[in-house]
Image (tube, rainbow, N blue to C red; front, top):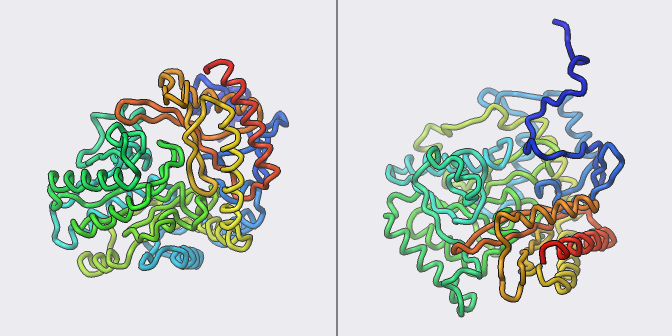
Length: 455
């Protein structure tokens, strides 16, 4: 068959994320920077989709992938396993909270969360709890873009397109976000107690014998930029899960492997979920990789009630080249002490952002941990008057930033019918103080242009 490649030169056959937008072509990545084919440099202030934790162009990861591909690039894990699969699983288990010591691999975060939902159901069936199928999740959250994970998430813009196809059996509760109407006048410990009381009442109303798991982001990523669960909240959820025989599943797709200054975000509260899901930072996006870390009592149920079999699987589960990327990535993370670097540079970045937003009446609510920080945009931060959602001001600000050579992660949310726009600031772990200063200068320049048009 003769190729007709030359006949197609100049034609565009790409299914773009947005057909009405023009995208720069990136030719190279190095450290915290991207370079397009025209030679323009962009400071990657969002680590891609908060994924390229160790930065771009790390040769140790590339070399590990090349070496693995030269040996064996693919096996079917229903029939075979590889040495790198054993090595990476052991490495991840050694970093996980106690009792979480078995690792299942997928190709990304949505697959990881889908796997956790199925495993939770199979676990309860194996313990003869036939009625447990419902999932509790936050009304402002994101757990993936498959139909099931979209169902349990709170990204309303994406969900409304598929409202007729989305799965039932989801109990959504509002997160302990301090701008809720019912929190006005309450101290943090008071509204945490209020939240937990409301959740328990909802559990009882729904019937605990119908609820399989509680799915939660310990620190919310794209839907409430870098919103940290208040102290006492996750501890209270853990107690409720124990009381009513529900699995606690921590979605650490964005936060895992050092992003918040701890290996996992749950380490900030010293709680142990039943399942942790991960992706993004496990391979720093050098290859598609995700998975879940599972507590031993769930594995024992599979062994005892299901002849050891998990009724689930993917063609690319345990892909050797992706696993090699993951192992080399974590080795690099540990060998270079990058998690302590995240803590140090996160404090510096927070102080610089605090100073910056003090100069703008349209920017406030700075929050986060480590190098996962976020802020909100308002017409006026004193009154918290929001912009209209149709203005898409976070996306507009990010486009201004890109023109100025820096990019972040914009988003929109809503609580109690009050919309808000927000921005994640999440650079690669290898960023230096001088590079943080440059990033802040570029953000300030962009905010001045934004203010002239919107504030």
